[in-house]
Image 1: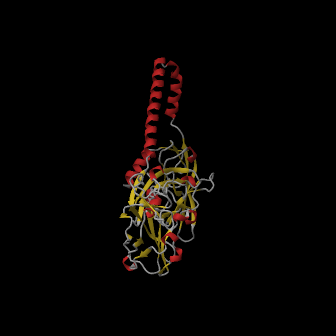
Image 2 (image 1 turned 60 degrees about the vertical axis):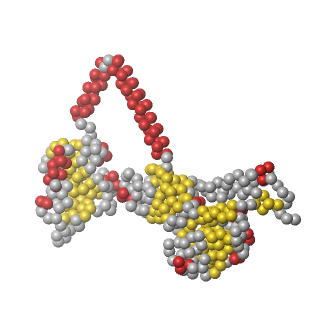
Image 3 (image 1 turned 120 degrees about the vertical axis):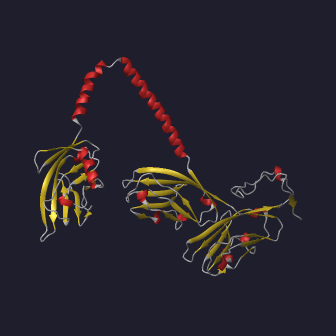
Length: 444
């Protein structure tokens, strides 16, 4: 395999030597070249260094202790140079330079450092590399310029139409592709799941110095990765402790895990990757839809209704369990081993009771005397004793029946007042109450 590699690389070169010790190499941009150098002894216990005196720093390549050393290397040669034979058999310490550019032209010095006795550094050879266009291409270009005056006019017209036609077709393809990419990927889950994965794997490998930023549709920062680590202080507080990003940058996988998703998390998430200079390299959107999978329906007038939730993990007495309604009012709070009635919103005081068997993970809530106005989404959040969110789930409640109206009898169909604008359920909008819900007059 090593011989085959050497043969292929040599076929890419046009090498002319002015002397045995100072070869001159000519190459074209984009080619792979070999800078030949051979140590006078067959000893693998040596260090090899290539340098260019016109660079700062001068180091092009350093191989020591059987490994490549990148510290102090000129940045233009990173990931572009390697030994032709890593075993350095027969003293062959030639260097492979990939994808050469015009700026690679110059005089390279090959040094060998011996480890026997006192360390010594010996200049083995100097190599002159010239990167430029081929002479036959230059001559061909000159010939085309000389012959351009003899091209018939119809050929010129045809070429113009071909170019314009290609531009139109390319523009249509670009428009279709760009609009296709604008359609975001949709991820759907049920409320109450432990977490959801927002996937993103780029088609190119990434380096550690990039910045990856996730934001929601309100431009709040969901997760920030920069300077080779996560930056939780940049996060919006609603997402703190709830996100975890994959860091397999070599494969381009920067997918994000969002813990305890709820209906309020539904929406578009924008993913942006920026260079270490702050330039945006790529952007993409993903849409999250969290469904309220469990809806409880009861008739108005029942004594109570159960809002059920049994988690898949046992709970300890030091957790905090908080139920809130669609207006973010506190329905029931359990903390430090007991219920906290004083934390409840006054409309729920004396109307709630929770299941006390936390060891089974059952945090269901009983709501007494439910009315039509109680309809909506109820969110249950479980916190650890350190304040971190362990689980969250939403339960929908729909109370059917009559509406209690203060004052004289009023026909709802002609009333200018409107019910609470908050939707009962995200997937179940409030139906018109005109004629379908009886109105009961208070007994005076």
